[in-house]
Amino acid sequence: MNYQLLLPEVFLFLWAILIFVLDFFWRREKQNLGYVALVGVILTMLLALNSPQGKLFGGMFLADSLSSFFNMIFLLTGFLAIASSIDFVRRLRAHQGEYFALLLLCMVGMMFLASAGELITLYVALELTTISLYVLAAYLKNDSFAPLTTRLKSSEAGLKYLILGAVSSAILLYGISLIFGLTGTTFLKEIKMALITKFLSYGEIGSALILSFVFFIAGFGFKLALVPFHMWVPDVYEGAPTPITAFLSVASKAAGLVAFIRVFFESFLVFQVDWVLLMAVLAALAMIIGNIIALLQTNIKRMLAYSSIAQIGYILLGIVAATSRGLASVSFYVFVYLFANMGAFIAAIAFSHTTGSDEIKDYAGLSRRSPVLAAMMAVFMLSLVGIPPLAGFTGKYFLFSAAIEQGWIWLVVVAILTSVISLYYYVGVVRQMYFKSR
Image 1 (cartoon, rainbow, N blue to C red):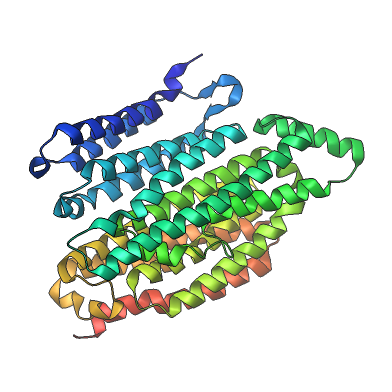
Image 2 (cartoon, rainbow, N blue to C red):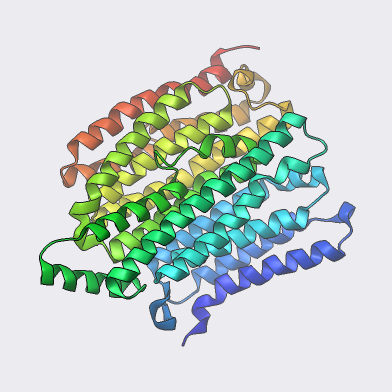
């Protein structure tokens, strides 16, 4: 077996352990563990770029083009989250090692998730990812420099994320148990063959398989922040440290997305008629509810939280198309979304560090006080809404065309109309910066 396939994941895991060790011996006032973490991520990127393709342990671990692409998404997102966290964590002077090491462990879980070719492996990788995020979401609860309300919101974020995450994990496990009972295997390719054999024998899909689809969609829907599994998003995004919120908004969605692609496109694609319509309805609900509620927000983090719910609705247009072109459009849009959304959050972090506020009204007159920051925020906002010639427009064009090609006209109409709604609150931030004064 070619154990070199595991080298990026194992290296990053060991680097996370190294940060724990350095934190134990390094004097607090001289710590620069954020830079150590950045070096680890860069080295992992180099290893991932030069890693061969193949499979290990009979197909439990798959190193292919899909895992390679999403690994780079996770690593790039983690790099930006760590870079934007360094000054923030240094100010607290406590738990630096835990913060950066848990971020790295979360990325390790995501990388294993992208390469999972078997359901138990996928579940364990998902838990490694989410347990780290539960802790990071509550990171501010012991921040002696923060107001009491901030500490309470952080505690609430971690607790709410933990409880709802545990429920979603239980639902996903129940779906896995149903599939195992139906097929006698947890390997994705073997599940596909077993289900095809049963379908050819009986001529119809059973109610237990339909129920398993529902449980899988519910379990992955929590990670994707799909309506109606989105109830954790606003409070967790607001209460978590802003760099963690940025990381959650991109990496957590990408992790849920690659898990969904692995399971539904590897094992259940032959039964797409039975789950694609459900995904189309959920995508429409995400776009409608996410955009409408985002209109009402006055806090930049909560606004971006609800807009991220809408964004996953747009991404699902490529999933609903269920074609290679649809998956290609999803990949392109996720890459664009990484930089646009992370950039918006990093700009919000810079503004918050200067003013101590996350309120949209406080962005008034920013173009005169900090023209570069205002220009960057404007570009990211306009890219998220899909204004040409920015990359967000190109990404949405690919998604819409993939869906239209498969006949999903009504869903594309919903996407276009809700994009018009999103124009109001995204451009509202730009209006505050350029046309309002304090």
